[in-house]
Length: 165
Image 1 (cartoon, rainbow, N blue to C red):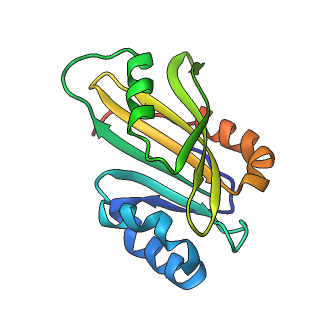
Image 2: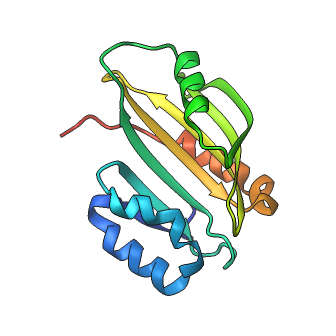
């Protein structure tokens, strides 16, 4: 996945301590965004944040891998299940299935309204041949979302699942 040069992060298994230290030092007010990722580095495959983002809200991208059952589901079924599981503080603005690089993926535009701040994000969900769901979420402030949307979309177009080595 390609990101602008201002992003810092990486594979959570390799960089969790570094990312945690940077968040603690530079942006303690957004640590809650990363608490689950820091507790579950195996589930969060990737995490990066934009050093140039507002000090009040950290623009970030994360990739989460979730295993489905062995049953096959349509993307429409996966999308509806995801929507039902969202907590009340997340509002779906738009949901659809789109084709990116000849692969059908679910796309959400959503807001997350927490007590101290609100975010707006773009999320893609791809189900691979092993029935693993890869959720890639780009999050920023609502004020910056439209400006950052083209770079989020360009970044996701570079997202590639490599065969396990």
